[in-house]
Amino acid sequence: MSEETRQHPRYAIDVAVTLTTGDEQVTGRCRNVSRGGLCAHVPIALPMGTAVTASLELTFDTNTVSEPLALPARIMWSTALGAEHQLGAAFMPLTENQTKFLDLFLKYIEEGDARRRAESEPPEPEDPFSS
Image (cartoon, rainbow, N blue to C red; front, side, top):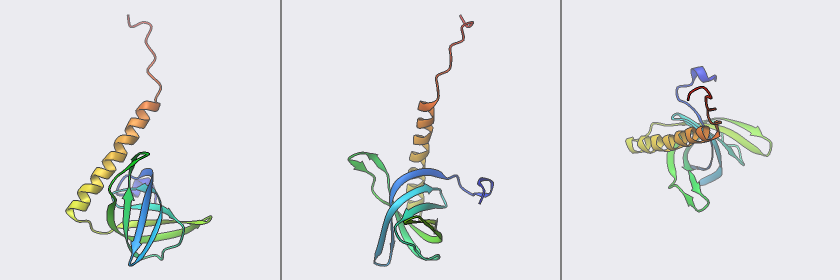
C-alpha cells in the first residue's frame, strides 16, 4: 500500500510490544505505528485474523518506561523474516479512552521526531552582507 492511499501517517519506532491472545503472550518489537495499526517483529507466526491485545511501551530513559498502552487488534498479515516474523495488525474499534491515549502516544512520537530532525539540521549560515 503506497503512502498516498494510507489513511493515517505511520511513525517509525522501536518499542516493546506484547501481543496477547487467550492465554498466549508473544513479545517482540513494534517497528511502526499509526492511528490504524502497527507492524511488529515477533519470534513466532500468528495466523491471519487472530484477535490480539497489542500492548506498547515507550522507553523514556534507561530506567523509565510508560504504562503499557493496550489496544485491541487483528492480525492482517504475517511474513517470515529470517528467524523472526513480521506482522501487521489493524486496530479494532477503540474506546474513547483508548483513542485518547493512542493520540497522546502518537503525539509523543511525532514531537520526538520533530525534535530529532531540528537537532540534526545544520545551522543557517550567517549572511555576511546583513550587517
